[in-house]
Length: 286
Image (tube, rainbow, N blue to C red):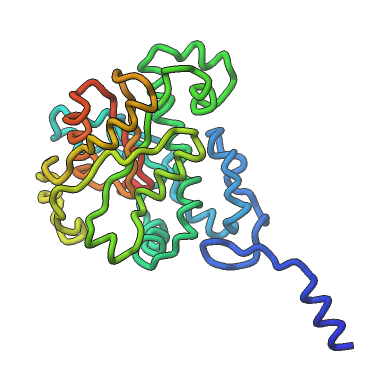
C-alpha cells in the first residue's frame, strides 16, 4: 500500500514554484492583471511569481522627469547640459526589495531571473516606443490601430528601433560573474520585441565599481570609458540596408546618475557620426 501511495505521489504534477521565493503558490492572484497600463496586464507575471512577490514589485507608474524617467524631480538632469542620450525609461523604482532581487541575479548568479527581468522591462520599452511615435508624428495612425506601440511599430517599415545593444561589462566583472546582465536583458528585449541585437560598444577603460564611487564622481565620468564597435556597427548597417537616421535602444540594469548610459550614448554618436537617436532602457531607476 505504501509503495502505491509513493507511486501516486510521484505521478502527481510538481506544483509550480515562484521563481523569486520558491513557494508553490502561483496563480493565487494576478495582482498586475487589472493594471491600467495595457503592456503590464499582458506580462502574466503571476504565472511565474507568487502574489507576495508580485506585491513587492515597485513599478514606475508615474514619471515626472521626462528625460530620465524618474518618478520625482531629478536634480541630475537639471544640472546636465545637452546629452547624446535622448531619454531613459525604467521598469521599477530601486526599492529595497528590488535591490535584493537584482543582487540575487547579478551577484549570486541566479540567471533564472533574467527572463523575469526581461519581461518586466517591456512596459518601459512600450513607453519609450510611444515617445518615438510622438516624435515621428505617427500618433494619430497608431491610435487608430488599437494596438500597443511595440506591436504597431513592428508593422511600420523603416520607423521602428533599428537595433538593441547593451552596456559592455569589464573583463574583470565578466570573469567574476560569468555573464553580462545587461546583455542578457537586451537579448530578452530583442526576442520579445523583434528588434535585432548587435554588440555596438566595448570598454576602453575598466573603471571603478559604481558602488565604490561617490555620486559626484559618477556624474563627472565621461564617455572615454566606452567606444563604438565599428565591426558591430557595420554588421548592423549591412543588415538593415540603410545608414541614417537610426534609432537604437541601449540596455542596462540600473540608472543611478545616468553617467554610464550617457557615456555609452556619446560613444554611439561618435561611431555613428551623430545622426541617430539613442534611448536607454534600464530595469531599475534609483
